[in-house]
Length: 371
Image 1 (spheres, rainbow, N blue to C red):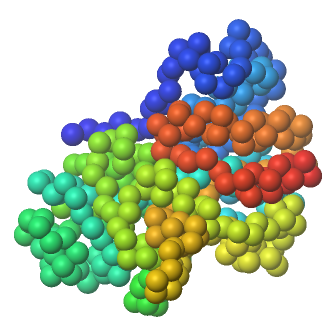
Image 2 (image 1 turned 135 degrees about the horizontal axis):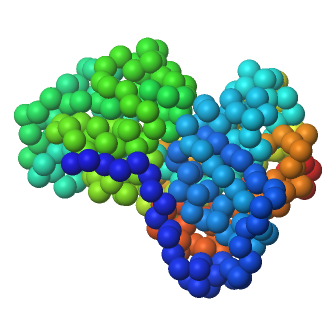
């Protein structure tokens, strides 16, 4: 089956868009200011179908966005070739140093997942250590005892596993490899967390659409790509074990639960090369820890969120620079984007994004005001 590259889903009538967003669509974008962005393919559906078109309709400012992956977004904003970059991985210290004065703002909440191609297997549980061993090449067949032990009642085929991964700098890869680093000492020692992990086995493809295409056409394949592309291309997704030992899908309530565990948000306007590492840790919602309720006690709200949290949830970031010649319009655009997912929860849900938590929105608004 041939899989298409991402095609905008929300070719909705203008009247529907206006009803959802509370905006008018009688004023179309005119020739003049055009904001350009590039980067994350995970967030591309939201930028191309929600943020950009509705911002243009309201403010008569066009927004053009090219994907290319998170690494490309960071490179382009660092080179001042775009007005904003987008990345699903926070900036590293060297990237902050190269992107002089750049500010990163979490502007969407999404997830990366594991798609698989196994005929007759409708439900698949996978734990972090098992996933790590698959992508390390230690587990090579679908009917291995390690996988069978997690999937009692499922008939797993005697079929070779084909791991598929991103071969371009990718925020999805960063989230995936961060999770595996956290749960697997073997992975941490051999590969580690990166936007470009050195996978020892499998096949690499460019972009989320590239991974989805190979998984769809390859019996026995398993690939890490964003939840939107898994859904768009009709692939099956594995349920992944979280810190509580529960197997969860990247459904919106599970992303919201993971994000709710973020209690303290750093001052986003104070990012520097020296504090980029702590920033990344403070904003990470990958693989939240779990604290078991005491005997005889009901679980707290936090413990309930920990039990439900999807372990590969992530914020995705917009990156811009205060010295951009179009910074006034960029600020307007980011402010608009920060309200759109919650105002249009129904559409955001179709695109597999979840509302940002209030603590993030507060910090975001402060950062935008300081640009």
